[in-house]
Length: 293
Image 1 (spheres, rainbow, N blue to C red):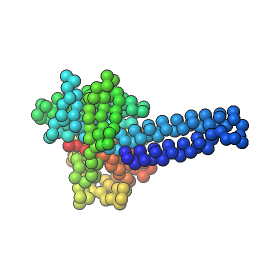
Image 2 (cartoon, helix red, strand yellow):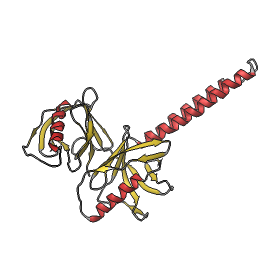
Image 3 (cartoon, one colour):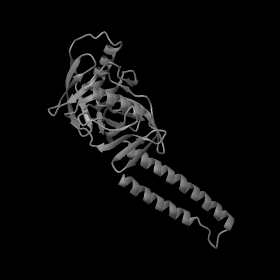
Image 4 (spheres, rainbow, N blue to C red):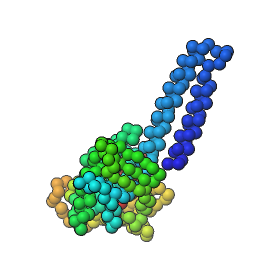
């Protein structure tokens, strides 16, 4: 945030010089020069507003936010459970995803200044113990959907509802690493130039090991393969899979086939906070993952 504030101050100083340069002088016609100054001043105001918005948006995205407290169903501020990490990451593509403590969730969001709107979240469908984890998850997702505004102070993110009541408080956390992280897919490429959500009731995972192996669940069967890295470039070999047939939910086998067949087309990977993306050489998204707790 300090870096963005520094850039903002530099731009503000430069725009102030522009206004001063357009100010009336003794040798210029007063009316024309005044109009020019008014126009420049208006441009300054617009530029400042845009810079402020950029600072706010850049402060929100690209960070793995870890929940500190939330408003429960009774509206009471409650500390997050210590043994169940809840996270949120706001992507530049207008999606927010993370762990709700048990299940992985995903939603869309929009930002207008410090106004924040978050859609109803979709999630995986696991059940976790103890029961407090599931209650926290339900309260968290409800609070997330009630978002109306947000503020960032240093490394703390605060989200409030339309009544101005704080419903969620986060602290900036560290990004996940490619290896040793349990990655859970939220989106995948169907192989028909379309990207869609992972089917409800199914889970696609990926685990990259230090020795160049990759394995996980493709939604029905387990798969295993190998990979190599060169900077942010990645090469994934065609995977081998187990041979089960899963009749439900509808479409699970087609989803699995698409995911497995697209993996060898991966050319690059990127990690932002707790989000991993695999893309083709042309930049097409192959799969998007979030780190599991």
